[in-house]
Image 1 (tube, rainbow, N blue to C red):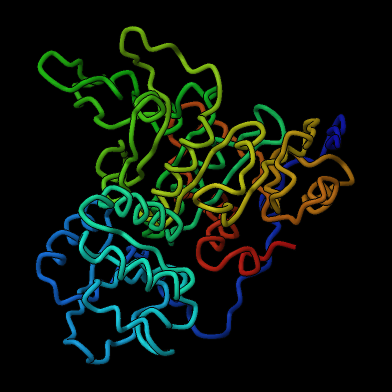
Image 2: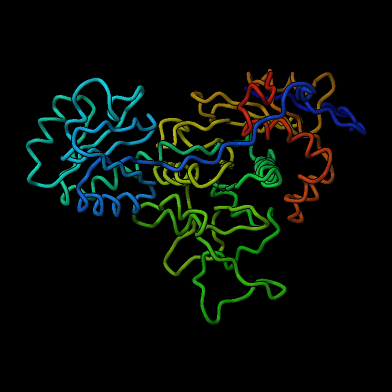
Length: 419
């Protein structure tokens, strides 16, 4: 599908650029503050002190919060949150009996019986009689239990993921993503901007930073940035895409670079000897794990996926994005064949509107609901060129254009007013 070509003298800019969004409601109670990201939790039910010590180490290494219930034999155990994982010690197998207890809460999906080698047969018999229950014979199954907790935690992130993709190269996707991320920071949300497009060459220039030292080992003799500023410290895709093992969510914010309150992950301009320049997208498995971890560590995750979006945006450990935004330039030809058809895209229209068109008609030609329209302001072009995009969120017109986008992390597309 191709977008409309701009007219020869298409639609001059007005003093009050049109922003396609529903006006904010003036009545009703104020919106509740956002819930903090949910830390994955597990409940261990046992009176075995040795088991408590061992399981606590495994759970802590997986970045999971542990609640310990050491009820006496036969005593009722308070029901846990149905979303929590229950680890039931072999000395409390009687809790499997009947229709009550922590393993029978409505919506319960995961539970694991934990014990020592001497409890092996008892635990397996009990698990066979209770569908959906797993068994971890310790210490042999410690590694499995840690991985199981990690995978479960990845599925339980509470942060909002906004994925941006361009309908054509040069549509302004990165500028829109940076503007959305800076809007989230100004709203008090912990925010991560992920540059998943290797063709971008890094987003340092958009953030007003020098990325030549990013990813370079720190130490004596490390070059400073222009003006004597200390070099950035933090991991880049060059580090993460070639690393072994998983990056725990609780460490993610500490190892990524940040500027003015915005954490970001991009490509490094510096590479160690023997490390080639990226010649393709981030491997889907790596991107999946990073985004899943980011959902736990940040309130808002903005994913700039470049021209066509990451391959198969659904089915990852992190599920699907909470909102997928396609940047459609009104004054250029575009095609949508490369976009993931399994995702419900929202249109963010940019550029000069052709004669006889408005932002709604541009979005309609793409078969998408309109999220918002970002007018072709000189201030936006200038900010993209000189690295001051982060300052745009403080200006009236860009902030107004981003209002429907900010509603996506407050309440989803319905609240954003997508048509």
